[in-house]
Every structure is written in structure tokens, then in C-alpha cells.
Image (tube, rainbow, N blue to C red; front, side, top):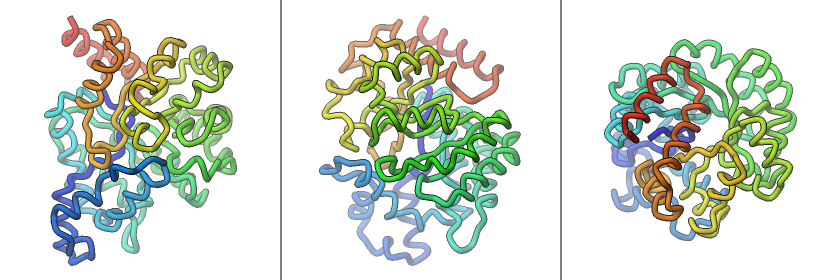
Length: 325
């Protein structure tokens, strides 16, 4: 299995977060372990992206510590390997963890150092800015990519509440990133409609779309995505929790595939959603009756769409072939 849409901060170990909150005598640490765990996960009645994203505000300040970030990053390759993941691209917003003490560069360095020290599945990092952030944050991602590309940073991303922020003013920065050859993926077509996906392609030069499921509303857009081989990073359970799909059966996953789009299967925020990649594959196999050929296609789509180098892609293709032979 391969995961291209995985948020580092959405996959923190809840128990470790709780211990950190208690160690630093933060307000969250005064809750019971059960209450704390419940606050770190999407509530049962969550049905909008805005409500989904609100969960993160509960624990961001706990994670604003370089040692905590480095520790979580170091554990990530082993956690992925234990779950059968062959390759992971994890994304995070460095500016969310600076607090009053650190720079975005220090935060990024802590995460890439942690991953490099870990043992397990290969992990690469996508740097992410939020849609309501100052344009300077996006500019800094471009600089951070250049500084840390040789140390595992493989692309940049724009995330956050697209239903509130179109962020077309960021276009000149993404023009620069594109000119520098930086791989770009953009969250779009989730809480907002097809125009958000057009903007991601035309203004932000996206090679992949995070979610993108509302592309189903525009046949011209779907043809363009298929023709230009722009991948969709589909996250089934997350789409239900944000209210962008009524059920797994109603999800446009199979319709998007039937239209010839390069669909991949991913987790989004494992700990926050209470799932892992095995869960998402089990759901897809159960709901969509995927054949071995379908599974192979999805995995090869992930390899084709990955932001890693050609040598690693060749290794991943060999591993997929061996598993599905």
C-alpha cells in the first residue's frame, strides 16, 4: 500500500500527545485520558470540513515542541512499515508548530531529521500552507523546499478551508515554485466545487489534487484531469466525515475511475479520523468489489503520481508486482 495524502499532524500518537500535555502542565493534560482521546478524534456528528478542521485546534499547541515533533517523525517509518505501507508522503504545515519559540525552518529541520533517523518504510515530506495564512508563509515554503529537498522534502501543498478561502492572491508564489520545478499538490474540490480544482491547476500548477471529488460535477474538468494525468488523492472516510460524501456507496470513487482519472487511495488524517490505510483498503474492497487488476491499477497510479525519484519508483513497482503476482 502507498499513501500520498497523509497529514503528519493528523497522525500523531494520541497517548504521546497526552503525556506531552501532562509533562508541560498544559490545560489539555488535566482531562482524563479518555476525554483527551475523544477530543483528538472527529466527533460522531461531524459533517463539515470546518468542524473536521476544528479538531486540530485542540492539540496544535501541545505539538509546538521540536523534541516532540522529532520523536513523532522518527517513529513514522516504523509505524508505516508495521501497517504494510510501502511508501508514504506525509504533509505538514511548519508554521503551525512555530509557536513563540521557533522558526518554520527549525520545525521543518526537526521533522526531516526525525524521519531520517527512523527505520522502516521510505517517507517523504510535503510542506503545506493553510489557505488563510499570510502569503509570506507560502513564499517561505518555496525556500524551505529548496533548502531541504535533498533531505526528504518532495513538494508543497495548500490546505485548509477552501469553502472560505480561494486564495488566488497566492498565484505568483506558485508561479515561482512551478518555474523552479517544485512538485505541487493542492487541496481542492472537497468543500468547494469544480472552480476550486480549475484554480489549483491554472493558478497553482497542481500536478495532483488533494481530494478533488467534486470534479465529478463538471465533465469538461474530468476530461482535462484525465487527459493531463493529474491525479486525485481520494480519502474515503475523511470525505464522509466532512460531509462531502453521504456514504461509501454514494462516494464518486468508482465514477471518477470509470472516467479515466488517475485515482489513488489515501488516509488523510489517520488518528483524527480513527482509521489507517488498511481500513481504507478494506472499505474499498468491500464497497467497490475491486479486482486484483483494480488494486494493481490504484497502486500503480500512486507510484506514477508520487513525488519521489525514479529509482524509488522502480523499487515500488517491483514490490507491488511481487505482492499482486
